[in-house]
Image (cartoon, rainbow, N blue to C red; front, top):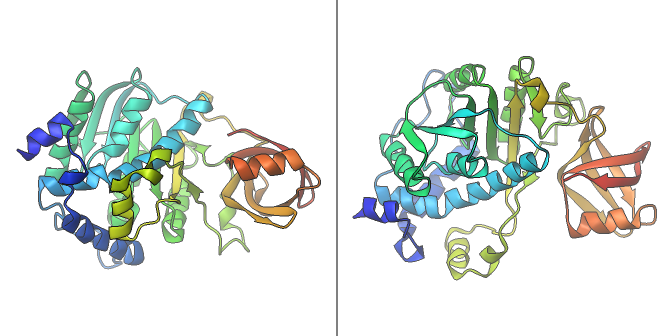
Length: 343
């Protein structure tokens, strides 16, 4: 019965197992706080399969995974806007869980994805992810395996990986043509992802969020309190949907904000060109009476700039109404005199 529900894509709010979601959320919070234990260098910190049933997976896929999907939607929209396309061929969604990341990528570039490979240490999760992908993309080749892909997709795994597991994942990434990696927007996770970036630069060029191929500016002295994070665009219907309202109330989750960290790497020179004049806002601009401050990342480092409403009223208005990520600033020292939004 459960498999039929999944295959027919008819799962709805009435089917959600709220007890399972509470249990899973408790586990996520524990790993967000603790991460992998140092004494588990060659294994994953939690060997047990926390998916106890297919309904666990379906309830998660319908709620928590959908929120992860909004993060992926934000990242993929930027990449498409900037003209980036993945290498044609196989996609491996590594540590796939219910497979939401792989599905979002396949949906974004249907002509480039020839085969979707799904891998997770949980056999139950692997089979669920395959069935969901087959239901959504009946014409796409979908299977489960642990192989070297053309495009490696990774989502929300860093808090569950021991140092040994992370090293093996980085080894796998080094063999792919491109890497898309999305994680929660917490400081400790962001710092781990920065370390991954530094270890892979060389054969790879950074595509996003970085606008340059230099050492990450967050690693500079004085930036220890900062971390590289951004905010997903949340679909408008979520705020009026009673199902999402119940989800927010029961699980104490703020639906108005969804921070994440991400990393896009590509070894193809043509697809990983530097945007030398671009700056990326880290987090969000902070607004005060008559001016704003932004933490901005560009080729010359991560620095805090101020923008006066008097100096650039249109830019100030646009940033406040429709906050973007990529800008071209005209600066005078630490002051932004004018600018243009790129994305």
